[in-house]
Length: 148
Image (tube, rainbow, N blue to C red; front, side, top):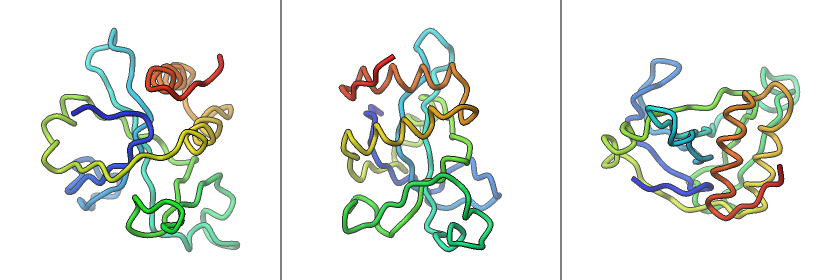
């Protein structure tokens, strides 16, 4: 399965739930690890529709996040939030290929939105330097220029 940076995907029956609940998940494709590494990993960030958690006084109120309103971002089926304080999902490209019948590309985010997402992940301590370099290289390879 060939994904490009910024693809928004819906993955039915996502096989690696963090909460034990297998359900459809929405992801934004950020890129992949260097092809020198084996296996090659794809980097995905997930969104949540549990927007109340980010309201003042709630558990994630102080988390860095990006809100996606479906009027502006119609590739999402509901308003949702990308929480930059949550870990990325890294899945092998083999897993993507094996599960491709459960994955649907819903659209692609614009370059400015993707650059802003990159800036959030580039904050100190959010992701490792190696992963950040892989993501930056993926952005550049897919035409979203990120300076070194």
